[in-house]
Amino acid sequence: MSTILWAPWRIDYILSDKHNGCLFCDKSKEDNDEDNLILLRKDTCLVMTNRYPYKNGHLLIAPYRHIPSREGLTIEEMTELMVTIKECMELLRRVISPDGFNIGMNIGKVAGAGIAGHCHFHIVPRWNGDTNFMPVLADARVMPEHLRATYKKLKEGLSFVTGEK
Image 1 (tube, rainbow, N blue to C red):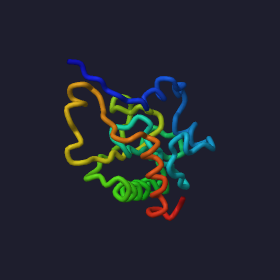
Image 2 (tube, helix red, strand yellow):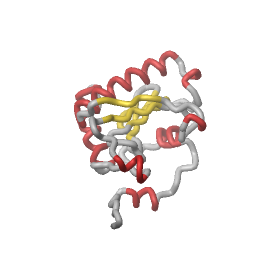
Image 3 (cartoon, rainbow, N blue to C red):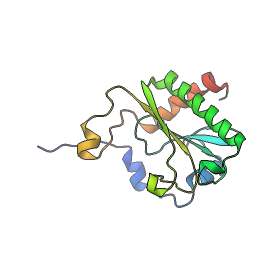
């Protein structure tokens, strides 16, 4: 018996031009936040919905400055990053009701950093029972909602958490 996995949103990735530069530097300079999945811009950092998430609502928080590790961050950048992480957790709790979070930073390629030259935090919402056999047996993730739908919900919920739109 064969299994068919239906993931129509993946065609966007298959057909897209692959990004060769620094995603955070390049996308932050564009005036195309919705297409780039940028949820929020602050003074020293931005928040993006991860285009290839582990779970729905997987967010990336990065400083605008291109630096490889948190040791290079200023106190102002670190403070705003931490406040932004707190605001994003409140946003995710309000909009998609996770039971918990994984929050972290992969520093260096050997640590799993996909964008090794530009430090950034991940916030991955988690739900009780969200890990099933798919990642273990099939190295596949099951996303219950399209990325754009999750982005739209989070964008609409921003004003409740940050007071910004």
